[in-house]
Amino acid sequence: MNMFLFIITILIMAAVTFAIIFGMYMMLTNFTPGQSKVQGDVDKMKSEIQPWTEELVEWKKEELNLLSFNNINKQVKKGIVKTAKGVLTSIYQEPLIAYSFKQYFGNKKNAVLYARTADREFQYRIREKAVAVSVDGQPLGLIQADGRLLDAETKQLTARINRTADELTLPIIIKDREVAGLLKPIPGQAPNSTDRAFEFVNQIESADEELILSLSIWEILHKEVPLPVLVNKDFVE
Image (tube, rainbow, N blue to C red; front, side, top):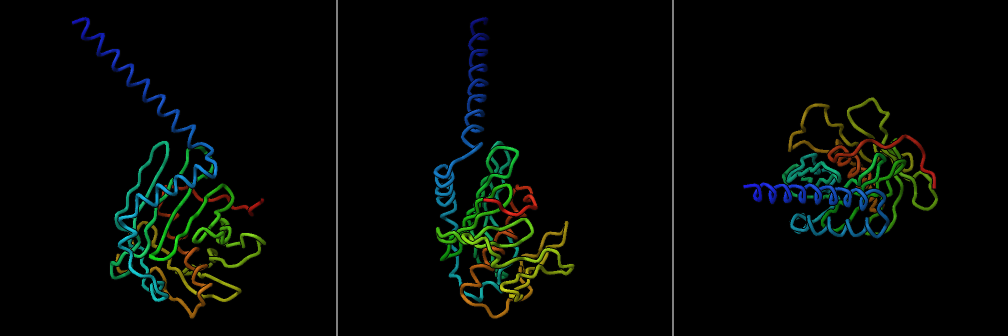
């Protein structure tokens, strides 16, 4: 009997030791990830949601008008490393945008969000002062806490979501022209699966669509993933 208790004690101690070592390993490898670590994680995120991305319907300009806040297959895991994934649909329940999110360990904002339509990939590298956005691997810009999107190279304003408007919509503005109005979800009320995400989308060019979609995906999804808000400061290189 004493031998049995001794063996059980050893096994418990070994399990606790393993859990501590594993926890320390997770914290250390996810505290200040380098570019290669982040890219490796994005590759894993892509493979994890591949079954969903294969089912995405073909994206056309009209899909902006049909995009809804409906989030299916939503999965959120909170722990040392927080993760989330899901699919945004059209008002007709067609899968339009698949996404995967990972927040690294630490007090400061340090996360990555990957999203894709049937034909484009969007990557958001989330840091304390700004979110670096790339489309199909090419840098697009830096999203500020106040909704401005600055050019990746010049840091000049290219588009913005006007969060100061006291209206039911969030105007998306490109070159001083309001091109779309993203509806504000009602606090404490889950949106209906048939509710449109946009109240309107004006005539837009292909380049405008990329900017609108980049801002809109971030605006919708950053409220769906376990991530605190950005610090309201301008990006500093």
